[in-house]
Image 1 (cartoon, rainbow, N blue to C red):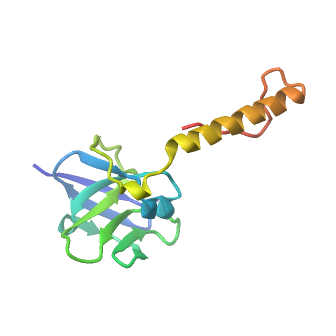
Image 2 (image 1 turned 90 degrees about the vertical axis):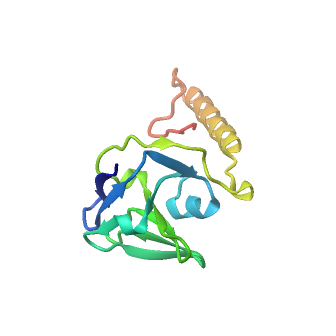
Length: 154
């Protein structure tokens, strides 16, 4: 049985209603998604294009010769991904749903040559954190923290 769910962009200009038939979702780590979102990965929910009704049509970005991405030109929210042809499906970003969905992440999708070097990023972030802590101690801070600077370690 399908559930009717709603979603949209951060500013509310672009809105959609979609029929969701299962709770499967996935994380994509491909380089195209990384560049489109500025993140290591993006969570997607795959749906049939015919099950999506746009109350306000999104803007579309041609992210490659084979794919397009819906987004809001006012606030910049990334809303999904679809191939230009040959598929009746598209993906909606999990974060664009209004209610926190109970989607279950399945195996992540990624092409081997596009896989992020997460361990390398963790080492770099850890090294930066150690350098900042050392700088804080040198500045006389007992906790080793440098005011106004934070480093996130994934």
